[in-house]
Image 1 (cartoon, helix red, strand yellow):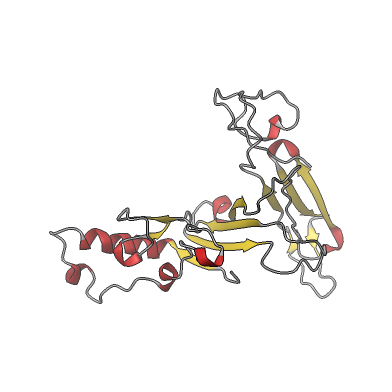
Image 2 (image 1 turned 90 degrees about the vertical axis):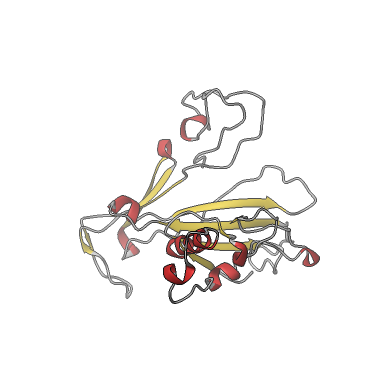
Length: 243
């Protein structure tokens, strides 16, 4: 899909209120929704069900199946299942087009990316964007030595004095300005005094290959910056920042 879907929490809340009223014999829809209710176009266009004849999976984007019939129909109460006050959703598969940079053949790796954020009085949360990746191998081959990597162009205004660093124990990479003032340069307006910093952290990385044990949390890779280690749960260990 060459598309980005956007879902608002306010639309979900209104949809739930409409369904609750419609299924409550003591609730009057004309009173609760005097101007009527229109299912948001973002719900109707949500890519919940794929085109199987075109080679897509039956189920794609997550949704709440309100009536439990296995189909996606917002008029029956179904709606996108997303976190945050606003969520952006993207689906892409590396076999969809030519690999113009690498010149390689397509693999068949499909990524469902969900970016979401919250409108919060907490400044830390209000300035954070969460991104969840669901990676699916749609090919008929096992991928050996598979790695995940992020490309991030972390410019802090003028790039001539930016510095990059990492806090490996917290699975964090960051960008900061080299001094207390970010000047203009290269036609880019700087932030001026007290420039911001930018951080990108892996909160929950990909699962490790199962080995049938609860791995230790000794301070060595990959344990000390991953999750699920030494918690009495077998094979829930996830990688953190490795390289």
